[in-house]
Length: 138
Image (cartoon, rainbow, N blue to C red; front, side, top):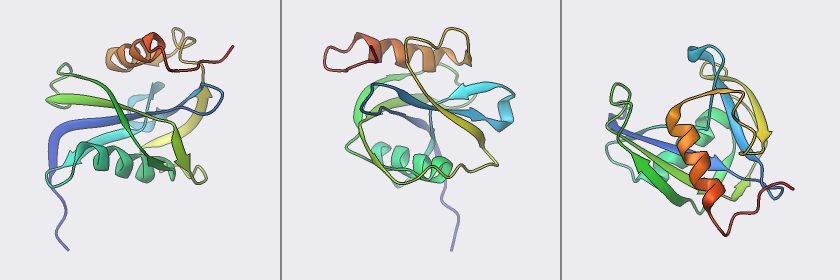
């Protein structure tokens, strides 16, 4: 079977649990950089499908009902556009794809200032914190 061609669109998923914490992963190829699961969309798939596929590949989790948080066109060296989704419905057990991610944590999105994360991830966390219908940890 031929390998799927990646687009220049990155799809990232902020998975939020019932306590209002977000699932983050440490990227193996960027030192101590933390991120949310995701990656490039294939040319023939929707952005939601790409986000769900990348989450499954990197973490073993199945995600459903993704809600678009926003998109950015910065970091052009990596992708022409970054699309961020929020997910509150997930299932499965964490099984990290160790070639890409080597650690995971559930974190309060308000407590990310002391971690190495990209400006896009910080921006998506700020967008999440500003949403009225999102319950964050007490």
